[in-house]
Length: 283
Image 1 (tube, rainbow, N blue to C red):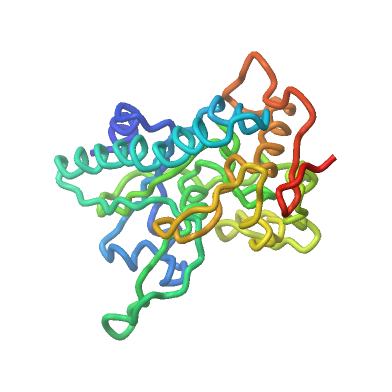
Image 2 (image 1 turned 180 degrees about the vertical axis):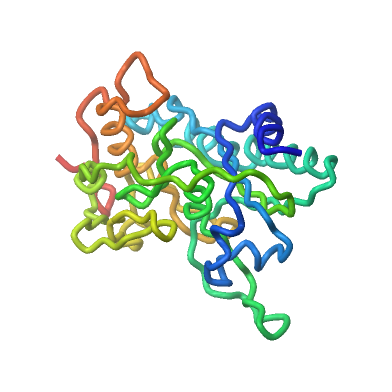
């Protein structure tokens, strides 16, 4: 099994993005976020992505349809059905080649341990991989100013899964940040002022970091501007894919004309709408 064969199989199973990171690039990550903590024999991490359809965001961008297209086709069904099926099929294919792969969803959450180490020297469960670091190591993109992952193909419009595998594959080069230009559209686009670029900190794979704005998660959790508060199964966090900050980012990236996927009409077709913390319209 070669990297080329794996990527072709993944694309055949519906993946829009496929990248491979060498375990050597990730070996020195802290144990609580290290793939080797999950699979001690890992040699590669494969990152799979499926794009978020631009059309699922149209109703949210217009402020007229919030609970059908995006929550289903852009979030829950995309992750739990379409991306999950792609991931499952890739693992089945790899096992037929004689290689093991641990499939993991790309949950973007920092969570305290929920148990005690099972043996000395082991991290406490649960180890949760930081998919943005792994996706960057796999050459797929970078974390932008708003803290969301950007790819050259789709900007922030994708969701990821990861495979921690014992297959030794030719790895992609880690991605050097070049997409986000710190325009600040995401910061200005948040009606709740939840993002602060001035107090941001570098984030990214070691040697490939860029500045990410500080974020007030308590405000994001109260956002009425397209964000979705998740349930227990997704760690009670907030999904910002359709939020005002991310939609402003999409509009800005498309205006620059740097994304590979191009459209006949602009994403932002009128003035942005906004609601305050109580859900009242902002003039």
